[in-house]
Length: 250
Image (cartoon, rainbow, N blue to C red; front, side):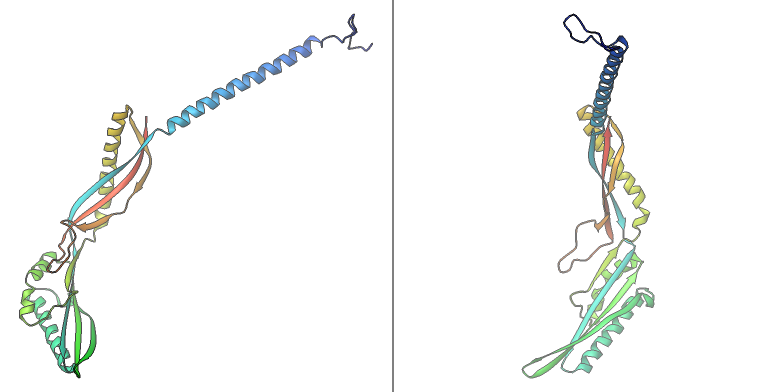
């Protein structure tokens, strides 16, 4: 019989010493406690992760009426004759009439520039016709004066200038950077207002912004798109931006 094992009356070995049993029980208790703590931490993490999912995504809108600060008026005119020299002489006369028209209205000469010339010809019943087309462009920041010119463009026609398709004025708002910050803030406030209404209906409170996306700025005619014969652009514009904001819900 060995020094550490005793035989029972039936010949079976006896139980380990008391200190071995205590060590085994301690290890089992530590393992059980670790499982309990791990389960609690995992459960708490799931709760916190679920709370983090409580959010609402809304859109905010900001609009502002502005006045254009740049006017570009393209004037297209042409003459058709049976000889090129006569056609060119007609368009030269029209060019002089256009320059006088804008000079009388007070526009500086440098604001009016030629924008190209085109010559074409065709033959009808053995007769060749030559067409000379020219363009002149007025570019000005004097919006009020530009509107006056548009209202008086019939004077050009009376002087013999034949305005072709492609003639027209376009107004542009170039100072977008001056209104961007305030409009983004306005759109964000509008988005929070929508989120607060949603939160109120669902019994929650609106928290901080989790994520925000600024949409693109659009500049359109305030009274709708211009189009069709006799309809021109106007200097009255509407700037619009939409932001998408993700708010946390508490």
